[in-house]
Image 1 (tube, rainbow, N blue to C red):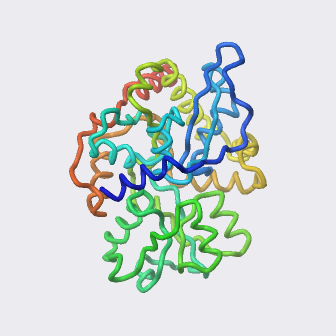
Image 2 (cartoon, rainbow, N blue to C red; image 1 turned 90 degrees about the vertical axis):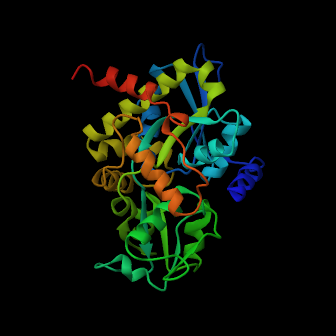
Length: 339
């Protein structure tokens, strides 16, 4: 826990990069700009971009300024420092702050993804891959204490494998540099999100051998969170934001992937619509997104089981101390009540 706190403090000085989106200022009438810091940029988060592309945010008089934090620790640091209004990352980042005793703990107001969105990539084709094939291997699976790495370790333990004994999890490479490190020769396997994994495989650089999300089961993986002080002053915008994203989730489940890819294309420079459509299909296949952006008690407890098993949880917390489902439930009922 002490190491996590140090990482969060150090990350306050990290400069993050803006994703290329339309200019977002408050000069256009009564539009409200929300600064969103996302853990990484991926089709895994398609509903967030679709809410913008389809005009759902505009309907709520919201503009989005989207920043790629490159890791949950950087996202949380951005929220705590006030550089971001809403953080979009694994809820474990807020849990660490809660356990650390902060007086203004970020509260989770919405959960978008309900399982890990990464794919395990090998250097060679393995059509009959089994988790036992990882014995004696080195894997790049994320930052120690982050949900990607802890979820991966959870899978390993469920398959009778232990880090440091049967294989090695490499925690030395930062989250946003893992793919480039893998391509440069580090480790035998690497976890990647789409469209990166799909493009990597299509280029003949590696082979997707497993879906981490399928193996791990449901867990609150990526959530929207903000400081309580900010939420109390912006409840209307919290509802509007979640309403737009909930509508976008509905859209992606009801629309063919080729059409979805057309709307996603402006958010992924250099990625073909065919790759985007294929990535959407892969996430639909593993049932990646929640239709109601609330968190369940069972999934919250499972998350704590995973973190505790990884040795990163000094004490357990109650869900109500970290999660406020009121806004997500309200907008879901509004959107689906007419069906």
